[in-house]
Structures are given as C-alpha cells and as structure tokens.
Amino acid sequence: MGYVNNNDITVDGAAVGLSADSDIKNKKLDYELDIFYYVKIGYITFNQGKSSKKYEDIKKKVNPIEIDGKKVFKYEDYVEIELDKKSKVENYIWEENGSYCEASITEGNGNTDEIAKAFVNSKSID
Image 1 (cartoon, rainbow, N blue to C red):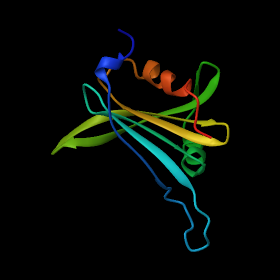
Image 2 (tube, rainbow, N blue to C red):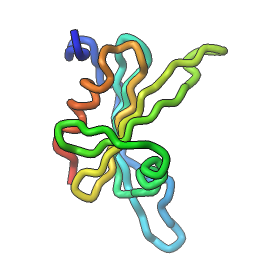
Image 3 (tube, helix red, strand yellow):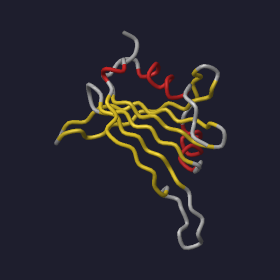
Image 4 (cartoon, rainbow, N blue to C red):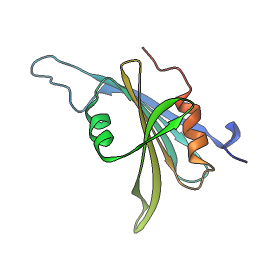
C-alpha cells in the first residue's frame, strides 16, 4: 500500500483563527485554517493561511521537490509524542493561489509523499 486509505484517517478537529503574524494593534488581521487528523501513528495536520513568512523562510533553506507539477518544499523535524520519545515528521509547504499550505505527516503511516500529494492536489479555500 503506497498511501494511507481513508479507513486509517479520522478527522480530529478543525479551527480557524488569527495567524501568529497578525498585527492586532493596527487591525491587519490574517487568518489561518488548521485541520487535525488521527492516523495509525501520531497525526497529520493541514494548515492554510495568507501569511508567507514561514514559506519564505523554508524556501531559503530547502530545495524544492515537484508533486504533480507544483513546487513543494519538504523538510523534516522531530516532535515529542510521549515523554522522552520523539517521532519524525515530514512537512510539505507550498503556495496555492495566494495562500500558503502545509501538511505535516508523522512517519510510519505509509508513503508521506503520496499522502502529501492528496493535499497538494486538493483545492485550497479562497
């Protein structure tokens, strides 16, 4: 199996909120959408927002890969899932019609590139 099938993914929750770089004092607000999924091991998260700050930062540090003709920046980090236990997370970030999207996938749930492809090929929210 090259990807996680739908029976292995459960939507845990979703939220819309102010992005971290909003300037509340000057009433320049940016919003972001976050969706959280439970999977066999760890989690998958999806984030979409208008702020390009993280995208621009990652773009300077990482060479892009191509997923179905779209430029996607893939990088990894490690998160603590239990006391003294870290898991590798593959992160994919890309620009889509003026929005910036990121999918983060805990290792061990199948081919992360194939899972990311489903997010990259989905339509962003305007």
